[in-house]
Image 1 (tube, rainbow, N blue to C red):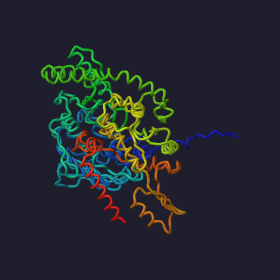
Image 2: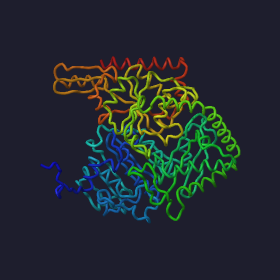
Image 3: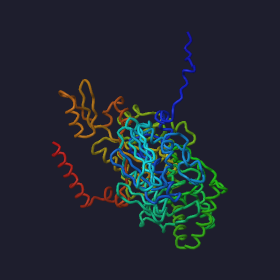
Image 4: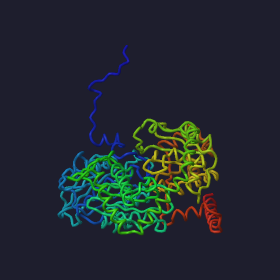
Length: 619
């Protein structure tokens, strides 16, 4: 009897647009997630709707966009031209339908393929679009992409424009929550790229007058800038550059047609190359590229005709041509930087002198560290990095392109038992494990030299591949996984200090997280509930009848691999590590990781008292 599987006409299926999106959401919005990461799907849904409103502003229609997020409901209202009333349903429910195929209407648009709002519609439990123009309005409501209600050509006195409301489908985006910090960062980028645009988010105003100069002003504290921000603009390009006095690595913010290309692309590669070439020619010295770019903090935005991105989420530009009769992206950026940056340095000798001193300082430090780096690399090889400290994931072992996968995750753990539990439970395709040996060093106020001399830091840096630029980061998510006790908390602080001290852009760009694992397991013969707090434990005890069995997990190693698979799988809970914009990195490190002070003692006592009071109230 043959074991061959039959393949007939009955095996062929045709999915309609919404079925395909719901079956393969990753093709349209990248990863799903629960909102703990800035590139999670719920933010892509918001971005896809918002991009249409931004395009209206770019075309000169509507200077204000209102956004509201209350609970799980998102509302975006612009005051642009409004969707043509007869096409309201088609634009949000028919694939490859939209105004952006007509270059007369949208010259250099963000969204080009007519997919964005359809994906939002299909992946929302509730979706409503309303368009107003010329005193009339039309609207349509959907559930999971299915039309449920429609109104056409209703007389109205409302201002023209488009309003989109949606609620992400919780069967697809499980346990999701919008984080204000991520939404705020997205909106700031929009106003930096569109000076004069006003965005109101839950009543708070976002506005920029100086474009990318404002972005860098908000990114790097004035006291930490080596020189005043260089801000240069052309017809289809804008750049802003400065160098940090304290930061070690390079930091870039890149954009194409208003889209934040977090993974760079052809334009960022060309920009990095052009800066090096221009500065070499200006000083007449063949400086090392790494010395020129060390500590650089910069931003670039370009506009391209019909850009080609490497994914629907548009995080990396693949285009090599500017379009519209212009030269290649590489040539265009190189010519602009060569002309305008060179002119600026000639006109501002003080900035040119400070920059050259910084390059020479970087050169001396590199030469001083060259021997140490060589020894560090030899130690890394001897340590058999990929066999002992790092259990890599297949996405990196097999991917020769070295492009960062959105799902790729590195868990940093301490101790053999915790590392063992995660290693046995992980998804070997996308999840890697780096095992620490004991507590890391407190690296506050130490020089970069310590990264190469300290075995743990050296191997961690090598595993992440972040020595020179965040663009080379091998994992999209870096997750600190330690026990929920005093020692575990201390290890978290020491690791966060390491990143803040030497690689702050890892945190600034939203790549660092804390893994939350359950403190208790409450179960009876029929049901098991995992609890992440005392309150959740009490709720679980009340829910389960009788006297349930209660287990207190003292460490990650006590959780069996069969259980752990849930906590780093579909039910993973991550807390992003975020920076307080009101305080500089130096202030944070000095207060929490510097010498003990009366102020810190008072802070600990006050917060301990608050914690004890809270526990007493709950009891």
